Length: 555
Ligand code: DX5
Ligand code: ZN
Image 1 (cartoon, rainbow, N blue to C red):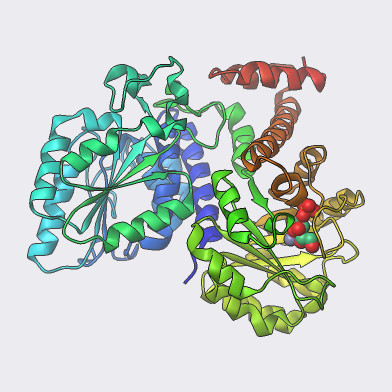
Image 2: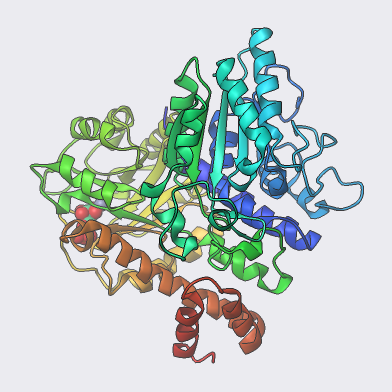
């Protein structure tokens, strides 16, 4: 069964937008801590939690305890997406009589615990986990705590108790975003090894100094440390935790407070403040434009693809783009599902399998079994019936559905019905067959035409730009609407993959910042442009964005 990566990402985005909607409407609330745990909740609600929104008290349900109760908007938005109540309910957040209060309240069906007085959720979780064992129930208890919250003594009493009673049906998450209330945890009560630098907002980037895990190990817990915004890492950690017997597990999740909205990220000011109405459309546009970088390994040493995958992992790629060529659909032959199966154990990073093969419907199951997270087949070798079959098999196996068109292929009309459930559209910007080619400039106009069709047919997936993407053109390809970027020659072909991916990200970031300034200017002229820039107070962002605004003539 696949990771269901695309469905999780889609629902995480919906939930983040509901947090913005709810806190803005309420005029108060906690977006920062809701966003740092957004992917954790997304994985739980969309893959692991056993629950029935129609029967919230179902006795065999898994229990989710939000110990850091102030992040209630994050919980409520996921509950809305999961079907406990309509999304419009978030407009009643913190209103008298609403079931969605500032902190979780048992008046809201599906809420397990009145979090808010920090430090108490783990004790409660140990209790219900023990009860489950005594009653021979097989439900699992998941608890999310804040890192600042773990300053509370009761957390450690509960930690000792859980270890003593071997409460292995309990998995805790530590939302390690390094910020509590109005400053950085390491300034208030350090949980990690002393930091040399003062720039604490960079703390989370160097896990080598991490010692939080040692505290939990000393209390007898199984500890897993992950990047708390990587869906694939959260997924694999939960699976490992659920398989670990005789000891409770804590998943220490390195996160960013305010993640996905640049001006909120790493900024203590957004612990408990609501966004203003005039910037909400710009924030939503920023949330809609998260992007992924996908190195294409065939641009590397074809005799040592294992090493090419390792270079992608150390380079922190979002996906790994696997170009399968059969020597018939394209003259070149690269590898098939057997190689993908060999590469799979090397990493949990999603495998983005691009099948440049004839008769894909005959082979698609092999690529599912090999461990692909998304499989893309070509328009030139499918029709409504064969693609329909491929679509259904992929959906049944929770693998992402991709469709690719060559430079001289328009989106076939028979395909329009599939657009609403498509996860990825690869728009080839080279003639398929090898890496290292030049980007075909006509692709820009083609993307404009495609965006009209995709919008008309409720496309909610990602456009992946594939072929000849580099530092010079990636900004304009992003502006065209691409949100996933394949890099063969421009990434794998480079000496240092990590630097190349970082440069790709920075170029996309620059382009995105420009588009957000365009939106600010469209909505509110220079005044809103200045307000938007002024929100970016952490690090160098304000100066960088101001420069882009000047280049665009807004200042
Ligand atoms: C071409 C492949 C592309 C190619 C990308 O048929 O589908 O993924 O490997 O490599 P660059 O980025 O070098 O064009
Ligand atoms: Zn490709």
